[in-house]
Picture 1 (spheres, protein in one colour):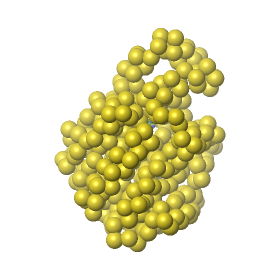
Picture 2 (tube, protein in one colour):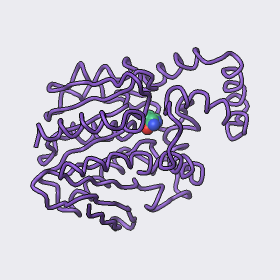
Picture 3 (cartoon, protein in one colour):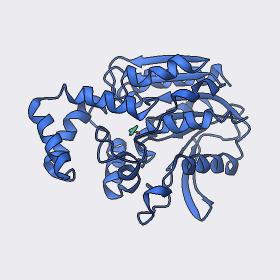
Length: 295
Ligand SMILES: N=C(O)[C@@H]1CCCN1
């Protein structure tokens, strides 16, 4: 399997990307958008398995983390949805795939993919929105509901450190892991998943600015985001994916199912936020079949 990495330079920034498989294959390539915002491609590396079906799979580190340009010194106003949409458009053009491609976005990446799709790009053939809320209000409501199911002492630890502003403490991190082991990844974290969390710890600029210190304590600039009222603009076949124990609860995902015209939804019963890790083989079977149906 050919694998080619590279750097795209645009507007003075650098975006790292990797192509797994033959980008000139007759099958339209799949572009994978990671979450966060401010994560890295590492934790969605398993989706490169799709290349075994003869389709090129493109991963990239969105600007701000990983092997792409880091900008810890810029202000919060720099990190906008439009910035990441421009980066994606630049990459599609740079790789010469703008006229025919599929997109799979996971979590924030699904939110970004939906933002891309509602603009009706001519070359988009299909859309996969995985583990993504349709609004941050729904995401927060889901998070608060899941928090309320945690052991009382864990809840107390989380709230006290959030109120004290000590979310960088080891105690808060340990309590956070209780939530993450239930609703982010329910299997022992593979190295490629751990690499993304280490990258966020090394440079939390984007994640903390747009999201907040944790998945469930959202105080960043993305807090008011919603795409619910624009979903009728999605004009391509869409596959929704989530996990039964996902922090992206069914309620948080539901508007995508209600409002996207051509849509289907798979909930992986033994997964939380990372079915591409937790139920890797059936996940890849679903994605490969959906893409083949929509080439
Ligand atoms: N893991 C993610 O991308 C989530 C989605 C919304 C905020 N962070």
